[in-house]
Length: 267
Image (cartoon, rainbow, N blue to C red; front, side, top):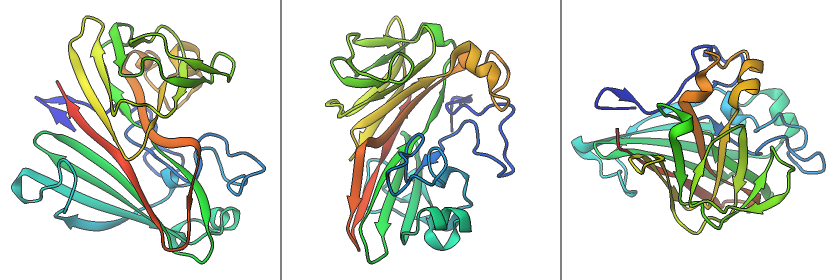
């Protein structure tokens, strides 16, 4: 996804694109659990971040959309749908999470931006609980000169510091080391990336979800990740990941959930 010839989405030079492991970069889809699943939960037998990001999705076609900020159909935008269901995940994942579900991931590219939405449907006869997250990697020129705006006074879990809950005191979050924070129930719909002096870079607007993860591995963790290269690549991206990860969403049989993001680049 480019603006004026410049790429918005970061993908590592060493990312595995053969399906052997999740892609390091892009917008990996996290479902049905975020992080290492709790062992006492129905997702407890699944790998970290669930199975959606390293399963093979089915291309469902190019469609005109009926709703959404960018989804007007016609020549101004194009919408592609991809599907994943209980019938096309691995036997191991099916055994670990034996629910009947259907996912549709919709990507709409318009002149004014990008929209990515995940629709979750319970196609079985019993309720299930899930979490979802769009683990988006965004390009920046220099992480030390970036501010993340729109998170002030929001409660967050700091996975690097102590795993405890804190309240964001900065109106513009500066990245000065490893960061892994889960911001919960954000009142403002849009979280934006800008330069420290206020030049806008990217607006990320949540649609029907209210949590966001901010992640950058910094120096030591980047070196330890064989699929994250070059070794200074941490300087050139920040993850602003929208989702529903504070607790669990519950879907009764036949019910659906949809959430995602609307993106506007200022490149």
